[in-house]
Amino acid sequence: MRTLNTNEMNQQFDNMFMAPARAYMALSIDYTEKMVNAQMDASKAYFDTGVAQMRQMMDVKDAEGLRSYMESQQKVAKDLAERAKGDADKVVSLQQDFIQKSQKITEDNVKQAQTAASKMTKTA
Image 1 (cartoon, one colour):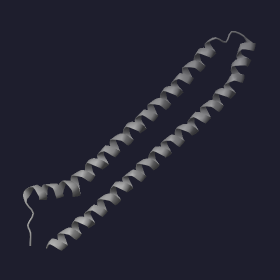
Image 2: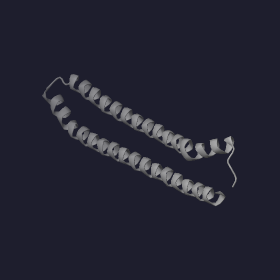
Image 3: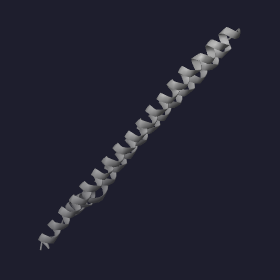
Image 4: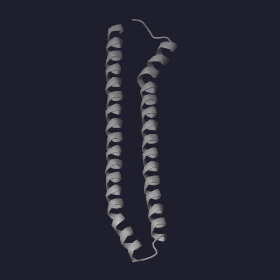
């Protein structure tokens, strides 16, 4: 029966535990960064729209200007609804991608553990 030296044990420990943990952490960091950026982009777009609407309202000087402003609100509402749908779709896509990649990491780790266990059984 062959015994493992310290370097081999360290390598197996790294392969079995630390490498998958690092892969999952890298995936989590990437996901978090993408989610935060998506939220910041959406917040900026909504803020910019709100400020633009306030500026347009400040330019209203008469009944005709008010009517024109109110008519333009339909387009703004439509644009915001489309933006909100696009933002929701982006979040769902990011979540699905994260889930698929994390499942792949888990599957790869299980396969690697099975291979390692099989090798250990054969050498024992």
